[in-house]
Image (cartoon, rainbow, N blue to C red; front, side):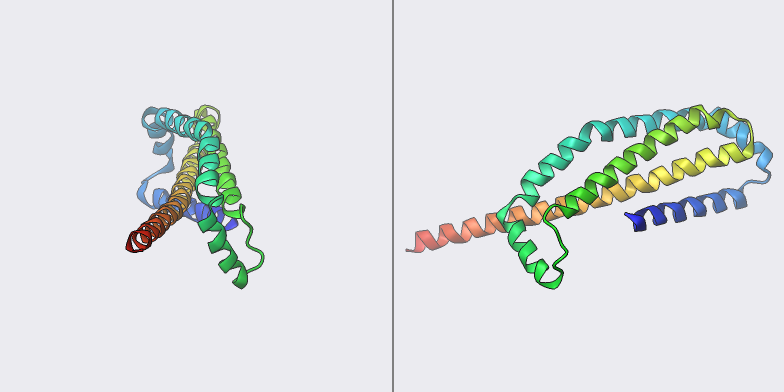
Length: 175
């Protein structure tokens, strides 16, 4: 999680450097931001945060049931524990749950900042709101990639289970 947050902060810093190098003068940023960006950021991040909030429990519970409680996953875990005994059964789903929660908080905080700090017509307040948006986008991408990795594990295990059933079926029909 620390690595993801540090990556998000790095991406935010890079975004700020790009804005700093592209903009001719900081005096133009607050007006452009207020007219063209602030409302979209508010709506977009509020929507994403609310959507993730409503799906968080569903995602975590379904992945727990369909991935982490399966015999195939537990067998794979036993093999991995031979190399690293600190690995826990539900560690990955706990980290995913924490990451989704942090992404939700980040998105909602970004949305709120658009209606509070974003109303201040000063370049520093505007850059802060843009930095919040950049950080939230990076957190959302990290969440998406983590969910994808977990789903890939689920699909790999499902395919392995299917192949095992096919082998058993072929062995039974050969007898």
